[in-house]
Length: 144
Image (tube, rainbow, N blue to C red; front, side):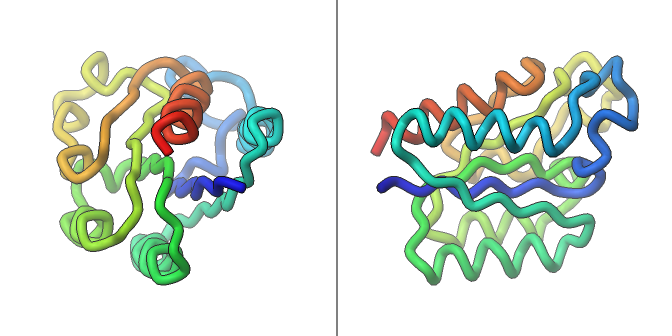
């Protein structure tokens, strides 16, 4: 069975309670349930993790890599634009990550236009809401 890690950064647990115009009205739990359903339909398992703390995210990447996880979806939240340490953890791991964002980064504030983490990911999907995660999941499961 294929396993896909799902790493969500700061404030993503607040979906449904914050900035619906950018992130939609669905909750974090609804997003995870939709992903679990899609993964199960494809015979895959998910390992979801969310933290507001950069070090926790980095340690989870290290642990997953050490455990042999090779596929992951990452939404670093605001750390996308600021965290060299998170970028370095992704680069040093054995995990092929797809970076996702619910909102369209290039339609937002200019500081959000640059991602430090995207260059060390297999790709980036931005602006398609929950569909961003589903497309990343489909890609990772097809790419082996």
